[in-house]
Image (cartoon, rainbow, N blue to C red):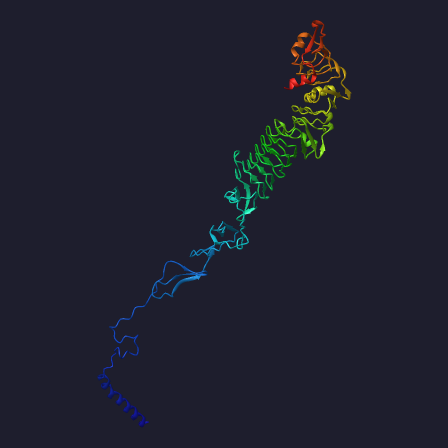
Length: 552
């Protein structure tokens, strides 16, 4: 134990002996000899280095999935507040991020040089490039490049092409393509192939139009005097004077609905018009087509202009695609001043000629003016009750003999009440055989008691009626009521003064007994208080000439 205590004391003494030696040595820190613990100041006077604080932008940075604030200090890899987007209505509600726009697919568009698509969402063009054309078709967009040499113009309103002229085409045949630069060709423009009357076009002989063509403009082929054949394709409307003075012999207007004024004016060899779809025909559309002898029309027909069929062939056949009832349902505007029905016409309903006995259907209420004018094929005519309107000259010159047999299916009172029926046979033939209520009017004709009015021309041309009695109840008599009859004696039950109030113009013209150049009717007023006797003279020598005079 004692030995151990001696050893410890020796060691302590040695340590104390070494302390002065270390104090003499220069052991302070230096750049060459840094301290072992640099973070601990070796004296109270040395300050601690500052702590670095990152700074960040106030603006958001973002990618497709996240957003964050980027560091603005030298530590650029540092970020703050990074998180995934919170999407609402197509954008992040925190940072405002919107996904990049993806164009919506659309159809190709093109012009003569290039093609493109237009995004319907943003209206921006994309995939724009020049055409790659193989065999007249762009292999990318499908645009067709016709080899036609004709001149075209794009209608930007309809996005279709109009043919405006011959362009570089010099051939005799004008073949119009259905499409040009990928768009439909729908119209032949105004004056597209027009020539002057003093310098007509004698080179164009044939025109072929596709089904896409719907309209031919005005004066389009005027004075193309060698143009003999036109395939009208899908044409619906033909403008005014479009084929004036051309060499067409047949106009196959199968799909055409509208013809303008003078559309085929003065086509010298036009013979046949096929227009079953026609709705309106303009003024003078076929004026002076001197060889026109056949026309086909349909139930859609609404109006025909003035002088449309004036100065055509002496004899023309009208083929109507509807029934007799359809024909009677046409507007007066079809016939008025159009010369559609005129002397020496032949009329067919659905292929059957209107001839022999014409029976108007029950329920007929009107007959258009000139509806049967000049057909010269009727022997007899049957009229139902209730027809309240007979147009002017509806049966003019319709009889193929000198006498037309007319049967009215009602009574004499009903006949007189149907004022139109009473006058419908005016000018139908030289003579009329009228049957009313099953009895033929011949010999003595007695107007029923109580009758107040006798319509104009009610008994016109009844050559078999020889005497007439009129009751005093009659207060009105229409013009030419008994004109061109066989009446020689007339008795009126009223007074002379009453007769003078109701007697009309030309009541007995062309009637009576022949006396040289005159016809004479012996007339007597039989009222006891004012009896009167007179004779009526007609100065024309024939009933036919009398009728012609009044018609003029």
